[in-house]
Length: 594
Ligand SMILES: [Zn+2]
Image (tube, rainbow, N blue to C red):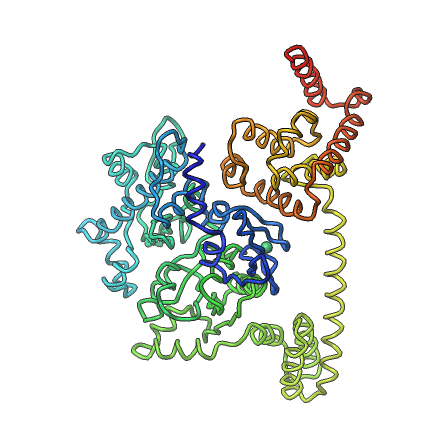
C-alpha cells in the first residue's frame, strides 16, 4: 500500500493539523504550540499538543500521537486508505487510483453497498403485500408510515434464501455476504443462508449516511431465537463504537441526548417528538460509545429499564458517562414502565408527561441515593440507620466537597440528624476509596515497565532503546545527518526490532532521496507505532541535535549490542541465534563487497 508522495505532501498541506483537530475539539493557541483537550482521553487541562511545523500531534496525558492521517483514522474509526480518501475529499483532491493495493478498502465499499441494498430489500418487502406479517406487527405497535420511512425500517422475510438470492442477482458473492454479516455459512458445502428471518429490521446508519449494521427484533413469540439478533462486528462496523439513531439525533438541535435501552424505545420516542433519543445496542455501554456521545452533547438522560439487568446497566452507564465528563441524569419512569409503554398509557398527554419526566430527571447522585435507601424500612430506627449509612457511603464517592455538603444538608433535613455526622460518615468512605485508588495506581506504575506492546524488547533493554530513540529523534529532526550516521551504524546493530525498523525506513528513504516526514511513512506503521515515533520526535526537541550527540548514542548502542551478542550465545534463544548468525553473514558479505 504505497501512495504517491507528491500526493501525500499536498494532502498534508491542504489539511493543516490545527484546522483538522479543530473540527473535533477546540484548539487554543498557547505560545508556539497550540493545545486542546485530548479527544482520546478524559482530561481537564489540555495536554494534547500540536506541532504545526511538521504537522504532528502528541498527547502528554495518554501518549497518543501521529499526523493528520492517523488522527483522522482514530477520530472517524477508519482504516488508512479511508482516512486519506476522506481528507482528499474534504480538501477537493482526487484520489490517485493507480498502483494502490486497497483490497480491504474495496471490500469495505462492497459491504457498504450490500448493506444499503439489504436495507432497501427489507424495506420494500415490508411495504409489499408479501410483507404483511411485518407491517401488521408494526401497526400493532402503532408505528406510523412516516416513522417507518424516517428510520428506513424493514421486514426480513421468513425465508432461508430470499435476501441472499436477491443480493447474488445483483452480483455480490457469498464471501462478501458473509463478510457483511447478512448471511451465515451452512455447516456443509459452500452454501450460505439468510441470517435474519421473520424479524423487524432496524438499520444502523452512521454519521456519514452509510448503512453499517442491522438490529432485528423477533415478531413471533414462538421464535426460539433471542429478542434481538444484531450484526456482529464486520470490517465496517464495531458494535462497541456505534450508537443507534445518532445520525438523526445530532440534527435534533437539542443540547441533550436521551439514551434508551432498545431500538424500539428510540423509534417510539422519535415518533412522539423526542428526536434526540438514541440507543446503544446490547445492554453494556462502552467507553468508546460514551466518548462518541460526548462529541455531540454534554448532557445525557438515561431511561434504562427498571428490571435488574436494566439497573445494572444504569449503574455501569452512569460510571462510564461521568468518567467521560458528561452530566448524567436518570429518568425514573413510574411503575417500572419503559418510555414507549409510559407514553402510550397516557394517550394524548403521553408526550407532554414524558417531557415533564425528562425535565424533572434527577442527577445521578439523586438516583444513587434513592437506590441506596429505598429498600430500608424508614419507620424503624435500624432501617433509618442503615439507610443513612448507605446514603453516606454514596456521598463518600463524590469527589466534590461542595456536592457532598449539599447532599449531606438534604439528608440531614430528611432524617433529622446533624449534617456533620453524615459528613463524617461520608469522609470515612471517601478516605477508604482514596487509599484503594492510590494502591491501585501504585500497582499499575510498578507493573508497567514489564510490557510494551509497540516495542516488546524495550523493557529488557532500556539503555539501548533510549540510545536508539535518542538517535532516531535527532535524525527525524536533522535528516542531513543520516548519511554520516549510516556509515557508522548498520541497522543490524540495533538492539530492538521496532527501533531498527524505523532506522531502516530512514536510511532507505535517505538513500532514495525521499523526504523524511511521518506522514510520508505513515502507511508503513500502525497508528500505535506512529504514536511512538512522534513521541520520539517530540523528545528530540529536548536534545542538542548535534552530530556529537549522535555519536554518543551510537557508542551506547554498540556497547549494549556487544553485551547481548557474542559472549552469551549459549543463552540465546534459537530465534536470536539464527538472527545473530544472519547478521554475521551479512557483515561478511558487506565486507567482501566493499
Ligand atoms: Zn490524551
